[in-house]
Image (cartoon, rainbow over all chains, first blue to last red):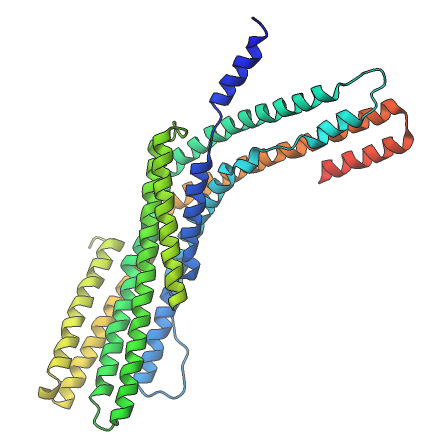
Length: 281
Length: 130
């Protein structure tokens, strides 16, 4: 009877053992998607510089004067602050849910026990291997349970805050930064319209001007698409995190694994689409 | 007057943007009917409206800080705890390596071999400091 106790104990512990792979997939894909912020190649400051340069061009100013973009720099600083906080959180979650983290190596201990001369004490090499294996499984089971508990707590503590931050970054990018591109488009339209109706300009020059205008507006559209995709990614991450939060006490359940897989794959698709747009530029 | 929220500022920016679009379109569509002065005046008016929209978007992006201060602090705190747990779990491997070095040192003492003892102490010290 007593010999069954360790077996039941092992089953009990392994039952609580977590497969955090889905959490890890979700966190690492979220990190990848969030990091696209660095590839947006557009910012409030850049918008300000471009506006200022166009004004100088319109005024036929030969010598460039320095553009004052203090307010825009501040707006970028705030967006960057939000971005870094979100990125740090998901990187931390990725590290903590990584399965390799609790795959401990017992080789050194096994080797020391096998090769050591312990005087009269005789150690059976087969037993050492078996104990090492069991120790590995038990250590992993215990540390994985600990990890699961911690991750559940952190998801619970962070959910409201991370959603607010994701929403704020999405708002700053999609509702503010992207709209500055609409402003730029109108400025360009006005500027190039005047050139296109200028009677002192030849037909050939006008064609060149139209080509230039089309290139610039295409560039604006690509940037807008990038920002929209980035925003979509942030929304998906927020929804995925909410799902994690709702199921934080049953991270092993099949249903949550399936739903998380869906979010991870959607986020991965957005990252791929974003990279495609980046290459097209 | 109550302070405007970042959402309200963006909405105002959207209204200015739509207004400026109408003004810009009017100028382009009626270019031939406008005098040079009228054209210039409308152009400047258009530019001013665009600048308002532009500034409102920037101000809104800055004002968002008011809404996120507490959330930023919460996330920083959770991230710090996550990283602490991560480092704690990473340390388990170090503990195992130190334990293995301890066993090696014990075996070396049993064997009464001075060279083996010296090597084992070095290994233990390396794992401890590593």
